[in-house]
Length: 291
Image 1 (cartoon, rainbow, N blue to C red):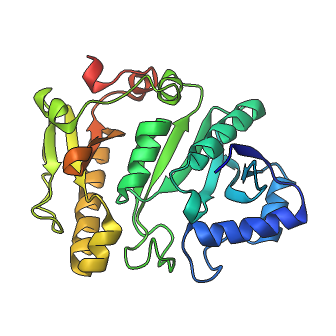
Image 2: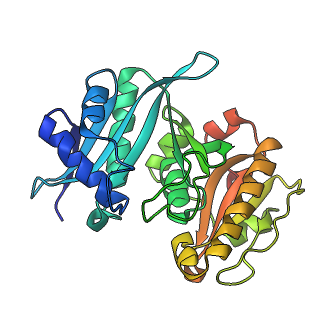
């Protein structure tokens, strides 16, 4: 694998190739969940942003990211990143990070300070990438956001989503991208007063969530791979979905912000961290373990 280059897409054949990248990235049997070439072309030519990641050696398109300018109900404008995907054989190569870093630079050049997108809060790798590598925060949870999805990643799990807020000018994001805001282990956060409000009862099964904690830091366990759980026990996967939904909805409603995903790799344990702290303090780069 060679060096990864990221640039805007502009030619019709590139938008067609991006269709194949999307299908491969989501391991889909068809193109139902992919944005068609004509939509990508229209987006790119009318104020949106469509980026492709390429292997410098072969010239192959290995990833794609696309989005558009959006407006919130209170009249504030931001960039909405609808999808970012990387071909299966290039996953964990850094291509996804390269796409998001390039997107950040482009959006800053456009004059915007906020990028939003949705992701599945039940997928541990998604949580780790979004919270820990990029520095997003989450304050909103949506049930069944897209309806039933048929690709192999989402099939059978429903489509609950959280909305990431990536404050691209903030000290928090700058520190994250520079590798300076590295979280401790889950055990260290418990020692700091964090309370685990969702835990696993076995390899597959989730315990009953605690929804009435008032600790400043609460930790929510995620399965290491919800896809593996689903393939072994679909009802257990559904129970995880409902438990994670309850925790997000309960603690976001009480003013907590989801700010991090912490892991104990040796034990294959991962926890999403909720912090009861004002948004401005979080964006200034404060963290529970820095107090």
